[in-house]
Length: 417
Image (cartoon, rainbow, N blue to C red; front, top):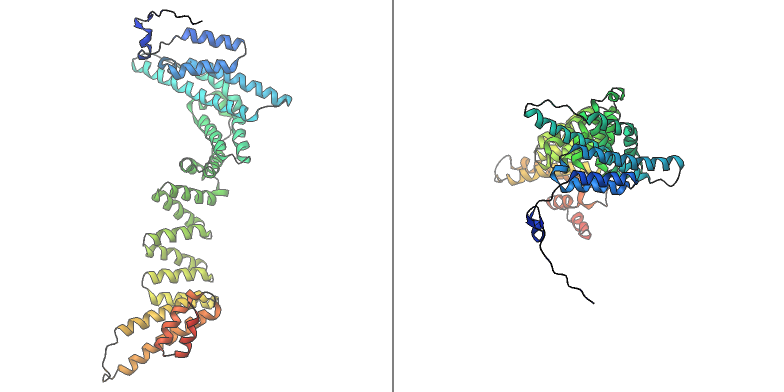
């Protein structure tokens, strides 16, 4: 049986409840606190936390009240205590939950202090004398967990939960450097672990793909000389991902100057300058390496390639000649020498327009053919030492065999596609 009840409007603060959605919610701190205290007395900490956070999230007055954040810290402290006892008693503790409560406690402490400082600033702006009332008290709640907050980051790092690891390292560094804690008496007993924590923050942030965070902690992390080379590499890669070319180049240049034997910095710089068609800058880097390591073939080869990009064929020839002195079976360098001779022959052939009656005709043509012969010989050496790599010699041999009228050898190349 359905019962129909007549509806009559009820006013709240002078407005019909049917239009209540249009009115701003009314905050009653006394009601919130009554519910909160009841929950705390009943040890219903989850509900107590919900009551405080709901008020903060709903009412502007609550969000601007530092005392509510302080109350929430008490709730979190109780939740931490519960898990701590489980850990001590080895009674199925929730380690992740324990760490998360601790993180939230610090976040709430920082927020409590921030809101109180904002309120004090307003009062001082009006000429009123105002001193913090909650800072020392709130600081006393969080201080005992500083070491565990850092350990939480290390725990997640070892588990390869890098995003979570960074979250805790970041909170630890933020809290430790904040006025909220740094002005407390206990802060004078802290060891200076800023560099250590910054290194951990950079490593975990990079592994988590948080490039902006990498750049935030990178300057401090550089204080650790034992891993600086790795940090410079990470920083340059993070800057590249952020499209910050200035920062990337600065880190690469720093790495190259300090660690020239680490090929990453050289190769990254050469690639960047080549992509930007700044071949002279790339050449400068490689020249530095040939000076430091005169018997390393790869650096001479790189220098030869850069010199060719700059049109410095005579210098490139010297570089590739040095390569085959160091490595007698260097097919790539023989191919490069062949290309230089071929280029010179082609340039000379294009400008060879003198008549047969010219006294210099015969000697000039002979010189051009001599270039083709040298080019052919170099390509044949490339073929000898790396026959499977057709790109090194096939095209060059086809042209030089044709120019030298070596029909038999040219026909033999027809089997190659």
